[in-house]
Image (cartoon, rainbow, N blue to C red; front, side, top):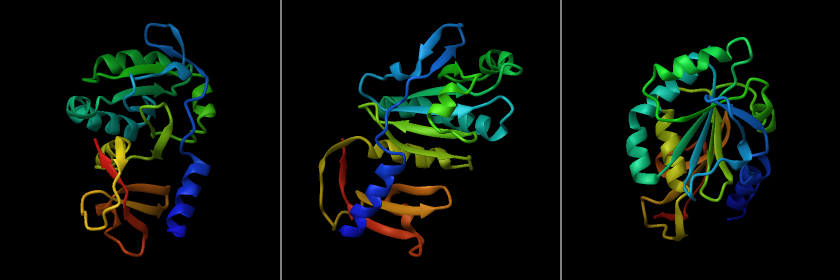
Length: 206
């Protein structure tokens, strides 16, 4: 139990439970918006930092687009795509987005204000915000299938009540220390016992 709490303390101290900072971004309509006002009526949000010159970013957003309707129906999640294209390439964002089948909110961050405020070092960088507006998960780089990990992460944010039942195979929380940092998700992620830090049944999704 002490080990479990220590790992959670590391997560909290590094990235989790902070909120979206105040930083100005621009919509495709040219209107300025303070990122601190991003909201989704108490439902989860995804902020995806990307750029038109970033091939993995576009692969990730296209992969999510294929399942986005289903995600919205089951969880109400909203994705906000923030382009970090600078002044030289930001004019390409609108035409590119218009050519895609994306149903996302898209904003421009040409000066990198939000990028710096959220300590984003490179793209793609994906951030999950829970219904109360707190950052609960993030990762960077994209490999095929990472969208499934993202889906599992925001399903885990829909906590109704504690469920401490070691016999349950469905609600175990797996915490891994990987090259990308500390990550958490369903028990299936702990297939490699060398990476397993702790596993305990902790949440009952709504």
